[in-house]
Length: 433
Image (cartoon, rainbow, N blue to C red; front, side, top):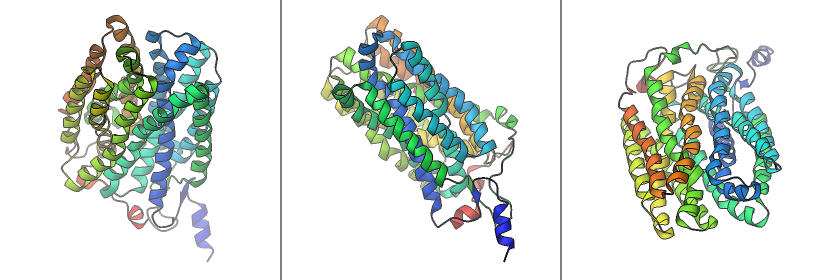
């Protein structure tokens, strides 16, 4: 009678021997909520930047530097955050990062200095960047292999939903109250969610009876096999190109439409809301379809990136509000449908033990596209004054990403601990919950 409590007490921090039925969906919900809030925090800059430019006297070409500072911190934390997730567990990493990034959002909303604002933006990115790797680690730990694609699709709706919420709320709030109010509201919400995640999340299920082996244990991970994994390197290059187009559009589309086509800030926000809202349904649908078809994820991803490149060129050739409204949902499909597939490929190519480190490292490479593109598009548009040229530069990213995928083999026999898609583990404990 006393042995069970002793076995339960010996479990690693954040791991419990049993959870209520369907607890894996609670895990997915909290991971999604955390990723959504940091995506809202990241997307707030785009619709707020024209008001901040007027308030602080920052010229158009220099606005991208703020986004670049954010993404520098974001890339650094992705690279380190995945390693920390494998070492300390997602529960600690998620709770700490949400609390810190929320506090810095509140601080930025009260800033009046450009240098301080740049530093705080970098800090927000530094803490927000671990959400992807920590979330994917939890999803990989709790979800059976047959549900990974759908779960990844649901999880990845966070990035597009964040853009929807920011563009629906920030322009109106900035006009009525001031741009700082958006940062205060979103920052406070992020901190509240941090407390909820710390209280309810568990790092992983036990794989057997109490006292048996567990799916997660605190140990320093050996990440050397990841550096030799050619497929992960190419997947990183593909995602770099995709996010070059996606976050280049998210960061600059409001300003480009306002300055290049003369539409109002609220109308520009509506276009971006439509662009992102479509993706909220497309991502889980794409994950579900690929789960059911079982044909792999490489070729669908390649086709989507090519489609995305073409639709960016089409959008850049438009010059009216009505035309933007018509093309925006089509562009949203291309801009977001690839992300659940590339995310779901990571644990397939890396294996489960290093899923957090692999997700962080690969996403860090992906986010280099987000770092570079804001600082590139501003000078391009400033020098040419051409809406079309700016979007042609954006379209080059997903085109190069599609070319990188030609070298990826997601059906390659497992090396360095990598399973094939068909052999990807299906934890008994995950099936039990």
